Each structure stands twice: as C-alpha cells, then as structure tokens.
Image (tube, rainbow, N blue to C red; front, side, top):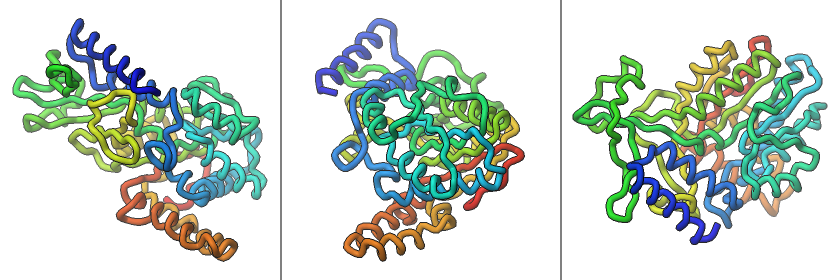
Length: 351
C-alpha cells in the first residue's frame, strides 16, 4: 500500500470521528489490519516481521509429523482435511504437508485467507489447495487437522477501561490531528463477569470476540467431524489485565495510533479463555505449553543436528534458527502452543 492509501484510511477515520464521535478500538484495529494485509506480503526480512515457518523448515516439518501421528493413532480416517487459518506465504503448509506425506497422510489442503496479495503467493506455494474466506465453507465431513500460527493475535481486540464513573469501552478519538485512546461514554459494567468488575481506576481488560468465535467453531468441528487443532501464538495461559496492543513495521515496534493500515497491529492471545471456550463445546483440551518445550519434545534438536550433518555449510544458520524458535529469551517462552482434539482422538505428543 502506498502512503496515499494509508493517508486515505486516516482521513476516513478522522471524518468518522469528527462526525460521529470516537470509534471503538476494535473497529480501528479491524479496519487497519484489513487494509494492511489485503495489499502486501508483510512476511520475511524484506517485510515487517518474520514468523516461525519463515525462520526454518523444521517448524512446519514438526507440525506435519505431529498431525500425521495424531491421524495414524486415531485410525487413518479418510477423507481428511488440512486446514490452515491465515497461512501467510504457505510456507508452513508446504513444509507440514511434505513431512506428513512420508507417513501416508495426504490430506486435502484448505487455506482460510482473506488477503488477495497473500493468496496469489499461496497459489504458487500450495498448488491444488482450496481457498476459503472463513471456516463456513470448509467440508463438514471427514476429520479436520487445523493449524493457526500467528493468526489469532491479529484479530481485533475490544478493551474495557475502569474509570471514575465505572467501566467504559476504550475508544479511539482525536487530539488535534492525532489518534488517541479515550474512554467511551456508555456504561459497560454489564459486559464483564461480576467477579472481574471490582478493579482499580485505569485497569484495562482486553477481550477478542473474533478469537472466541473461531475457537467455538473449531471445537464444534472437532467434536462433530473428528480431528485435532494447533493454535500457536504469543500470549498468556493465565488471565491478565492491561493493554497488549502493539504495532510492528519494518521489524520495529511503532506507535499503533500513528498510521493505521501501514503497520501490523496485534495483541496477546488469551489462551486461558480460549481453552475454556473449546472445552465448553466438548472438545478435548490437550494443553497449552511454551513453544520451546513443545518443539523440544517433538525432537527439534535432533532434527537440527541431522540437517547440519546433511548440509554442514549451513550448520551455523540451522543452529541459529533452532535457538530462535526454542530459546527462552526469543520465541521459546513468549510463544505458546495450544492443542485440541476430538473427544475420541488420542492425546498429543508435547503436551
């Protein structure tokens, strides 16, 4: 997207706020990310951020092996569907499907993607895949093997803030020409569970209705069709307070209110709440663990050694990628892996 496009989105927001008052943070984040993702490939060193599949093929390979292991132990039911939410460039799907194929798992690939720019890249990476705007058109028969890597964090969040007058929705208003967070006028106490209503002034509670809806639908699919799901993202497995909204552009954190549509807006995933939602539909929660621990359990260190032996000229790069994926100070602890399965399916390795 050009700077002019970003300027137009900013102008739209400014006119809207001037005419009708502040807009919700959820509206602001949703519109900004829709514009951002639809117009570009934001991944990789030349983009705005690097995701785990782009760091190393080992990440996608181990996911493919995990899915194959689950499917084999569940009885190899056909037809079986590989479903990925927000598949980026298709790198994870390519690596996972290649690894799974070695064990006889050759599912139909279904990619849920709304970005025109990324869909064009995926069509080259995963020829023969089926594309969907959302989960509603994914087949209803046959087990689903679903992966969502760094998908939930980009869904728009809703924030409530405790003011002297009680709970209010956090909105986006204008201070001069600049976008700023402000408290809305409508009382929102009823939107919170009673146990969370008592809080100090200034406390912020963040929710993600979109993530909750996705989890609800995926869990229902697993119960009805069989299958397993992995949600991999940065976030917390405990309920938290405070704003986690952030923006990344050209691999640096920037002000999320500066240029809507020009940076990737994200927020931490509330894994604790999502685990409860999934279980409420009868799906089996396998656990939520740190990414580093999960990848170690799946054998990433042995895989890195084998790759280094096969291609010694790349050994340093392979070790560096391994450390980035599992290191405590890097992605290993901040990123979590949450697993779900159909009630009759086996428990998963790594949880």
